[in-house]
Length: 400
Ligand code: SR1
Ligand code: MG
Image (cartoon, rainbow, N blue to C red):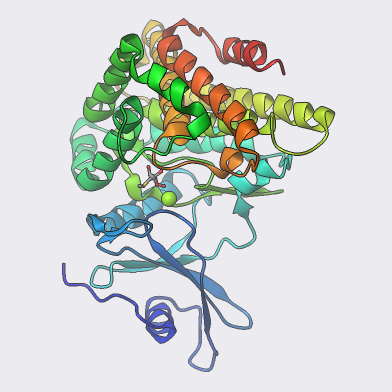
């Protein structure tokens, strides 16, 4: 793939004009770089009356530089995943206006009316429709790209369309390997060193993580977003938008569900030591736990409804099979939630929900909670019969 990097604002505005009908020749355009993610460059292009987003994938990871090369095919994957999600789950993703393989760039809708869910959680906002919106997003995008809906031939074509080896390799390493050894990429708070060392010795934990990794590698169940943390969800009073599906591939459904649940739990760990009144903190913690229940319950109900109404394959519609299958999905989701909590605590990429706690001792207290909860989720995942049991266990652990 030949490649033309945007070097100036003029490069970005020319690209925006060429690939979207939003601006007229008379419009004076301005550009601001807004990307705060780890991987790509993101620009907002705006006139007096309109705006859009340009996203460009360089042949390496933005925050690391040329030392960590990365396939630019990820931008095609993102573009195609956004279009498919728009079809399967209406208006929950930004509209794609244009794509150009030569520049490895997409032009898409500006969702400036929404803010990152991570920031909203850190600020203790109680946005009313978010958890339900996430549950619906999960049920729709995952059902309509699984064998429960697609024909056998169509499903294999989908697997082929979303072969995404470079991005999968990042997750294989940063979720399932680095945090379980003294890896040079890890970022361990000095006050947490002995907790991390203890974790690295836990062979039962490492065996369970290996089982989850094997599923991640082998279980082509549905098209995942595959990086569904709270920075990939944007939200406001009227709902959500989900962005950044560049990690998309056909993998185990529980990975998407687990990641977003984990991000609520990471915020919950952070809340214990973020500034503010104790009553306000614990009230918000209850709200986070209620949100997790709503995410799972909405997903569970809607996914079952889809199966009942739309699955054609008779063997996969058996009520006995569906009950067993949903139980497996819950266990997988909790297991992957555990891996997200651990990797965001001692791995390479942390989250602001905890990182923003300025006192290192208090931050270590929150990190310790995340590590302990992460291990419980991984090791005991099959023991939770429903989401309420998880909530009870978290309350016991965190005294909240
Ligand atoms: C080195 S890349 C680390 C993380 O950034 C992305 O957003 C993904 O979450 C990835 O795991
Ligand atoms: Mg991202």
